[in-house]
Every structure is written in structure tokens, then in C-alpha cells.
Image (cartoon, rainbow, N blue to C red; front, side, top):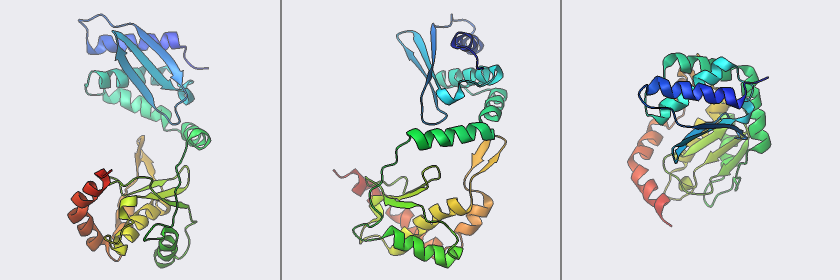
Length: 242
């Protein structure tokens, strides 16, 4: 049985008093919201504070709800989050139980936009198969491979473990982009399958030392990194075209 919203609202009142002892805390409305993941929001509107807590965290213990109150109010004030609060909250939501809940909820309610693996220039499935054979001995199960809906330049690739999908930026599906660059991005995302994220002290680490060592085994690692660095402005310009 979780803590009531009335009691949680008191935790937020206490959190406001912690960060601003000289001002009366505003009225606070707390509700649980069916976010896809473990997300929470706090908003100040017309002198009233509205807190939305992820539905899957309804039964968090009182200590974690207090810690979350301090974290969200600190962010509202743009103040440093108390380390102790961060530790208590992270310990609560980093358990296997909450990770399983979050993944199941995302699979149930999340939506992944899939276009096609066959681009105008490059076929992601063929690239995956070639890399899988060359670097992984064909051991990786093939995820869904797709080009993104829009051209992007900040994020050129993404692996979604929940939906077992690799998305590559449409910006790279061009005759002006060397094949080894596309291969490098796909290879990087394949490594997220080969080296799953590690959780240490409540934090999730994706690019571990083992991951980085494997990444450097890509035959055109240096060339790909240099090409991306040199052409990021071009990619940005193309992405911003209507």
C-alpha cells in the first residue's frame, strides 16, 4: 500500500520549507499520472504547485516519496539536489521490481515509429548482417532496424532495448555520406546489445570501459569520428531544411 496523495503533499510542503524558510509554501496538488516510464513533473501555475508522479511509483515507500519531493522542489528552485535524497530515491527505483515494471509499461503503452530499413542509398539490414558476421560471429539477434522519420544531427543513432529497435538518422542515408560512417553508427548501436547497460550505485552506465574498447575495434573508427566531426555543420544545415 502506497502513501496517500495527502501525505505526499505534506512532504512537498516540507521540501519547500527546506529550500525557502522565509516564504509560506504554496498550495500543492499531487496526483499519479500514467507516464510510460519512471517520470515525474512539478509545475508552478498561478501560485499553485502541481506534482505528477508516475503511476508505477504509486507504492514507493514514504522515504522515497520524501526524497522525490526534495529532488523535484530543488529542480523547481534550480538548486542543488541533496545527495542523500538522490541516494534514497535512486535506491528505491533501481530495484529489479521497478525496472521490470518500467520496461513492461513502456512495451505496453510506448510507441515506436518504424519507417524502413531500406533507405534511398543504404540498406540497414544488409549493413547489420555484414557487421554481425565480421565483429560478432553472427551471435547478435537482429533487432528491428529503421531509418528515422526526420533528419537529425545531434543524435545519429539510437538503440531502444525495450522495443528491440535500432534507429539510424535519416541524415546519413545520402550519397554524400561514406558507407563506413553508416556502418560505424550501426556498429555503435549493436554494441549496446552486446554490452548491456550496467547499474552501479543506482546509476545506469551505457558506455562502459568494455564498451569503449569494443568500439575502437571498428576498422574505420578514426575515419568515421573525423568525418562526423568535420561534417556536423553540414548535417545540421540539412536537418533544418524544410
